[in-house]
Length: 150
Length: 440
Image (cartoon, rainbow over all chains, first blue to last red; front, side):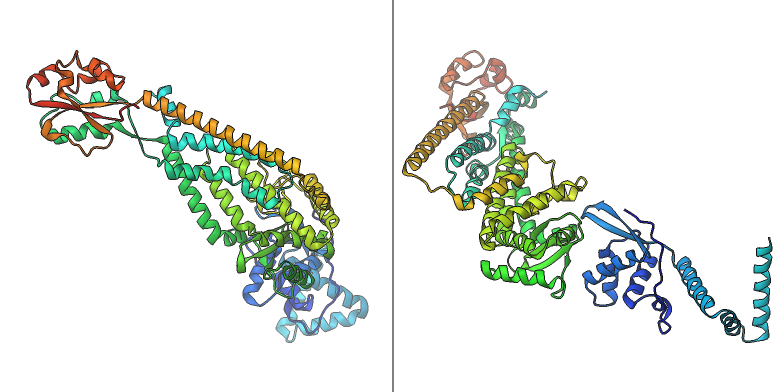
């Protein structure tokens, strides 16, 4: 039942905090709950019960949001048989760190594609505000260049 | 080593044998009776199926399980002469070892206790346990609003208070009802909600609410509890299965009437039945609770034990709702005649059974002879009588012929350890104490 969907990032919200820059608030809560959960895979009910402890929420809302995250390729799912019958279980397609790296790359690629060198200089300015940080950045660049030469 | 006679004695204890035989007789009678009474309504038919299940309760009320008087051989070994002084302890020694627990009595009591516990637990905690097992999620009034409005509308129509609505994540299409009264919860599976449109869901709702209206939660608990009393009798499972099937057909009929579209109800049942075929084998929890569902999820269960009739039978039953035959006078006469024959046959069968059982147990009745001085006779001892001394003036040889008047199955060897010639020669004995039931 699991499908090979590539995770897609449809938008970047400049005002959103952390994951909410990529997702809506509920999507962010759900994906975070799935990442943090020790038990995997998870049913919609399990996610719903975790979220219910933090805020008032309807089961059907969680169900439809998880369905949407599956459609976006962020969650994967399969049908499993258990004592409650036959149901969907979900797990994240990418782990938290992998997802964040992939998302940031996508955003930066998009910026570079649209605005070219300006993006690079802005990034350097933002990343290094004093000499020490500039030196560290230079070292990082040299390491990357060496790796590429090899 | 357990002999065949010992086993037969256990089986022929009245509380066990009567319960087995009368349940079987009543089962066959009800089966034939209902076959000739096709116009009886489903509710009455389902109650009729409880009659065989009530039989063991009645038997246990009349014949209480107890101990069985054991054979003499073990008694002989426990009694070694001299037995007379001290008299009280010797007598107690003689009485206590001969009572053995009845295994069949233990079975009956175990069934009774299990049934009582099951009934109490299902009535008080049943809905909570089932909700936990199936992970029922209670829906808020905003969720599936249209469905909840439909539930409210049909509840009003039927005349019951609107139950709560729950959901299970199960992808198989099904529905069931939990609890009773204010605690009633109508549970739909996700598979059902995804598969059916609102009109079809209304058919499911009316079926489930018909169960609520008919107090099927109570009926189910009661019938399964009663079947547990005689858990050792396979016919009790068949009887409970038949009663549950009648209840399902009743809910179909009432649901179809409330809906006003019998054909829609039939179509929905067929649709769900077909969809369930495509799912994998059921988990144990589902197997154990399959009687809860709208359509049995157990495709492979033998029909004779199923709690749901086959879909085709249910559809046929709904289809012929408008064609119910009205009883003709000749048919009524035939039914009365068949009923009379059945009653007569069951009375004869019951009497034969009782005669056989009584004859067997009397034949095997044991007597224990205890030599007592006249002042020490325990007249309050149950099932005992005193044989005057004059009837056996010459012990060891004369005792057996004199006792033959009681039809006792004894030999010299049975009496000797209790009483021998030298004991009697000491004098002072005025009679012997006989423990056991005199025949006839």
